[in-house]
Image 1 (cartoon, one colour):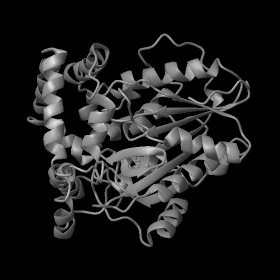
Image 2: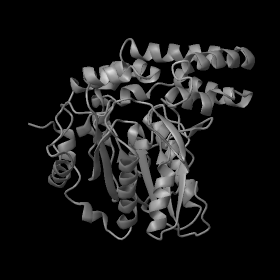
Image 3: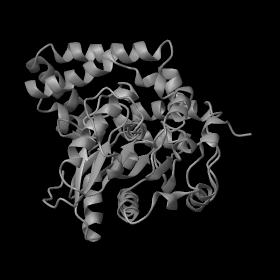
Amino acid sequence: MAADSSEAAHQIVLVPGFFGFGRLGDLTYFNGVAAALERRFAARGVSVVITEVTTLPTASIRVRAARVLETLASVAALGTGPIHVIGHSTGGLDARLAIAPTASLPTNVEGFDYARVKTLVSVCCPHFGTPLATWFSGTFGKPILRLLALYWIWVLRRGRLPLSIALRLWYWVVRLRDPFRRHRGTFDEVYEKLLNNLTDERRAELIAFLEAVSTDQSLLFQLTPAGCDLLNACTADPELRYGSVVARSPGATFRRFLRSIRDLYPQIVYPIYSLLHALIARGENQFVPPPAPPQRERLLASYGALPEPGDNDGMVPTNSQVWGEVIHAVSGDHLDLVGQFGFEDESGFSGDWLPSYAGFDRAQFEELWTRVADFLVDSVNQSPTDNVGTERTKQDVTDPPH
């Protein structure tokens, strides 16, 4: 959080998505996002305070939205400045439900002034669902997810010393591929920021996260295209400015597969990414309406052509991410946009959690969050009616395209 004593400072609330967390050990979900926003706000001469929501990884959207509303009520008490919400992935759906005055949420928050929220920006959000959720909510998906969580809970509870020794041995075996540490990747980040110092407190933190996954997986069905269709039909959007950031990443190629062999983590994960990308590309599209004219113009300007029905970011169809004004459209995967794209510079390093080889880099990251920051600052002086024509209508949302 950026400290600021001004009561009129802008408040930004960051909402993580599926499997989201604010921080696990030294791992952060929004990696470098707060710093990028702060830099742009400072360049514009505007004060800002940034807060991340502590969410539940796979709980229902209704429960997660309650966490968002509680955070909004807390930051509203800090001053009189405008409030902005940025939701990544499922976090965008959580935010939409949280700011709907008619929503019935499991929280004690009363009397929140919804007019304080000026903008909602969704990043790679499945507004019309993702076919991936259809698979994970099926016969095999949920049990596998629960069993994996229970297994790692069992491992973490076996005691700190034997687990620490096993992890250290595993890490040094991995490092044999690069003994001189010329390149640090995702395995290095997980070990150095989370597993290297596995204190009792950190183990308890991981166990709590995994227990949340194993006990409540309601989110899985709600992210299906049919589940999001119901959410869209029941959610009355208040008058504020909506913006979206959309992404698409490349499918699998043999050349990229050969490139992945150079590093153990991509060697393991790239085939998984390729499978997920292919499953989404062949999935359901009947609930996704065509973009509104201003959205079409921005997508055409960014990509040179409208996204195809099968285009996706490895997790969410690209067309499902469009909601309100298209602030930015990039070539990148689902996690690139929140700073998990793999880099090493003077500020530190990060692994590439979803190796898609989309070419997303630090310059694109800075441009993306600069545009989001400008959208937030400029929106305060604009009326929600200025956004007319950039949102899909209720008829668009509920009726499939012809």
